[in-house]
Length: 165
Image (tube, rainbow, N blue to C red; front, side, top):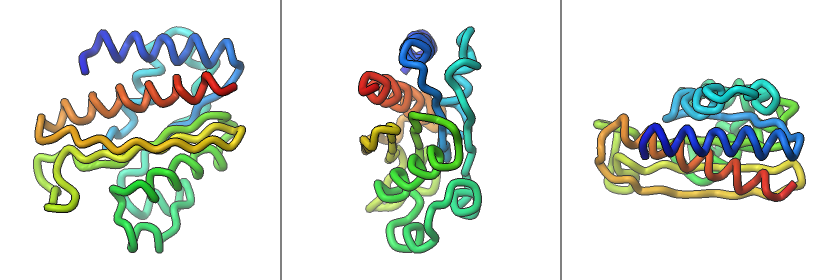
């Protein structure tokens, strides 16, 4: 959860995706572009980062990446279903072969009994059809720490997906 680990993961993302000749798209809510930002810290990122969508509001999720309004109403923005739709939408609205999404509650407010502060859902998609999901319960470790931990998980998921191709 520190800068050195994120930098090392981002370096591996760029190296691996360059080697596999695959582009990445991100769909970020709670991380607000930090996943794409971590990748662009690395020289050569332009060879692998196709685009990033910052879809903080529900309306942005609907308009920019095609999350269905009924999914948002039924499950809420912080859910497995929305995370997977976000990953699908990022891929379908880009030239990327790998996509990753983040949606969560970074706090310090906004949590509830069923969806506490620190809950983050991640979606990932590979152009060969593989979908992956992660649900992390980071707890109330602070807004910055939740967001940085989420960047770490998202980069790890990109590496996992890159190994498929």
